[in-house]
Length: 87
Image (tube, rainbow, N blue to C red; front, side, top):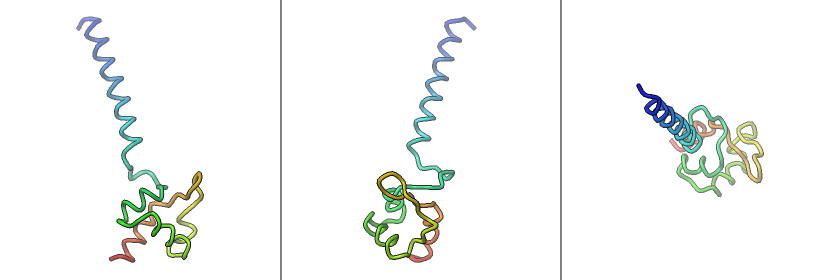
């Protein structure tokens, strides 16, 4: 294999690695434990305001959310609680 071919393959591998990193950052992961109110509302099929109401009324337990920037983050286990309530 020529040096030019090796260099081309190495560049392609580097680009693929970069693309995979970008995708992993953009796609929700089962490994992430804390999600945004927007992501929680999308997954639960309700509005962000409903999520806020559930948090304020105690339907979402305090141990399942934490301050995150200017909003809150919710532990992924909240989805199981929501599924039990809705189902």
